[in-house]
Amino acid sequence: MSQISRTELEHWLTATLQPHRFSDYCPNGIQVEGRDTIRHIVTGVTASQALLDAAVERGADTVLVHHGWFWKNEDARIRGIKKQRLLTTLQHDLNLFAYHLPLDAHPTLGNNAQLAQVLELEPTYDDEGEPVTCGPGGLIWLGKSKQPQTLESLGQLVCKQMQRQPLIVGSPQQSVSTVAWCTGGAQGYMQAALDAGADVYITGEASEPNFHLAHETGAAFIAAGHHATERYGVKALGEAIAQRFGIQVDFVDVDNPI
Image (cartoon, rainbow, N blue to C red; front, side):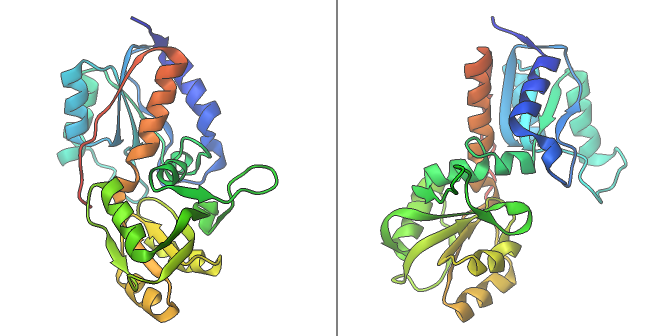
């Protein structure tokens, strides 16, 4: 069975995702040290108890996620579900790696890049071949649908690909050409997307102001699910690790309707 050291994986992930470029809400990289040797990784969106249990059941030694632990402003005490999660990780000597904004933003493996593939969107690129972005931290991507369509047809595609009914605000027959998207909980970035010229903004979650902003500007808004829109980056990252190092990597989708 192929194996690598924890240090080797950490160095590759750092070089690939460049977490030093981001001012994030949590520590990126290795959050809990486990075994020195890595043979089997489980990837998933969130380091929940269910994902940890799945990793243990599969005999994995490492968990790699988008949503890790130790978020700013959270209660720092180790109690309740935090205690149980940490206990499971330490008892089974699991490594926990987590990458938040660096995984959102990666130009090929990131959540935005992968969502574009899933939803058949064509990102706009600048003269240097970098995706054109806007909004705080440049986290919103801009592009177009691969074919002309209405909000209704785009919504049907989102429903099919996300495997859930999205929340859609706008006229079903309005034309959507310029698309802006940012996975996860980026509903607060809608105005920045519209300022950049988007006809429709796609994200994971919705807030009360999104409804009024869409109606009063004539733009469209789609909330396709926080978890659903962020399944694809960590899955792609795991596949890249498996191809690079030849170790076993399993993506486990612990579904979340939010």
